Image (cartoon, rainbow, N blue to C red; front, side, top):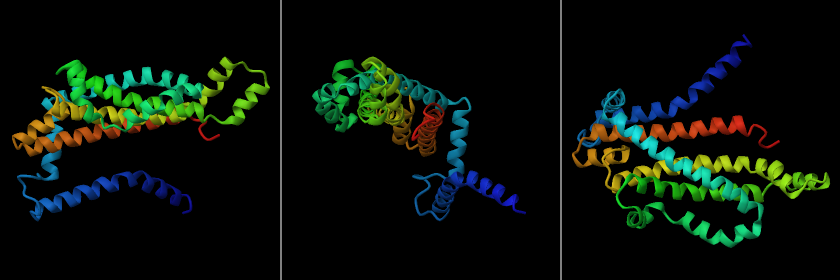
Length: 259
């Protein structure tokens, strides 16, 4: 009897993440059934999920989804490849970081959507524009987290390395870089979400023929609400999947965190 209780607790723990979505869809269904919102503006959850399934099973939605994934990953890779080493280098020399801190914080606090006109002037209406503005917004997040991860490395470990006679380069590569991995992964996880948000906004407002952002705004304009909500659900599922992917990667790679 006692052995069955832990199993039930484990099963309940596994089911917990599904409770929120289930409640949402029940409320959504009741709102549609009782016509609290016009069906013209809000289709039923079953109709929306049907449109999502058919669209992702080889329909046009699948191609728009893949275009958005490609642009998001391109922007994220640029931000990671440039931002991580640059952040670690700046963080290892606090004076260097303080000299550019204002610029990093200023542009990090500026909504990336406000910079769309600037990027339009530089890159024109093209895919490069969408990737560039998303990469810029994500880069600042990665740079900030990597730099602060190095600057806030545990002083005891740095001092221990110095006492054992480690050189500056050895302290940098064997202590500071590893100590910065956890905040760097936090920055990367935030950066991939930011890349997705900016890419979708750019697809909405910068001339685009493909992508979830284009599909959402195009469906809204022609009042194809099923397709619009299906595209929104696809974008949300993509963002959630990317976040979970980085959480798993962080736990596997930075497994010593907090020790």
